[in-house]
Length: 363
Image (tube, rainbow, N blue to C red; front, side):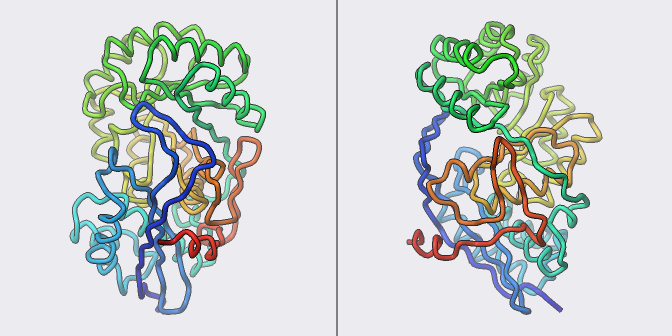
């Protein structure tokens, strides 16, 4: 029987090719953990999770300790495909810690797929669906810088741009108008305030850009303010997507019952992995709420997100472009080309790990 024999976590700092600025912070690098799941038959699965303290509250050191002392031991001797049992054990060992759990979940899915000779999308109940269109985020900043980024991304093949907002209303209105004038009417534009607005600010801002054909606005208000989001939906025709407000299935149910969302953005570090993300999509599908999946990951986490898209038709939008932002990726097998994610149809996540890159970056 091919059971899990070991779980190890390695902390890494990855340099971005160019900084990414949001209303919360500017990223020049990413702190991540790489998780390795070994089996008694010699096969190895891989997962990853990003430190994102303002979303999950977990630090790099904390994730490594949680995996070493609690979550890793919880899944030892399980069959890697027994994900329901793995999550029950991890949840009994530690509450929350969803990013750390996600990294293990991802590695177990990869390992289970390798052992079964199936891509992860098949394990999730779906199958390969071909290239996935992905958007790419334009950093908040001065008008000229935002326009230049937008032009470069469109030239690289991206047909949907996400414009970061939430810092300077006048500046951002100018930038969004200039970007629409520059890229023309056939490029999709969506906004992401990262909780940067109050309800009056959001109402005023969205009214001012309504004529620019905005596809959606992501997390305009504070994560806790579901009532505010529901009211904003009544005030604007622009669809509202929740991100930080929704971590798992229970959050999705509350958001739907409150009428706070037109769409929900899934991140695996919020849900705790692919298995809980699948549960979340089922709730959204039953309620008629479309989803997006978002990552800022290496080829490992990006492949996991792509497999989730292949398995869940309710995920109609994707933002899977982490490898294009990194100075150096850690895996091959996934490509982001001409604004589309192309995923290997090989078993597991369909990736090959660059072990030399990991060794060179490891502390």
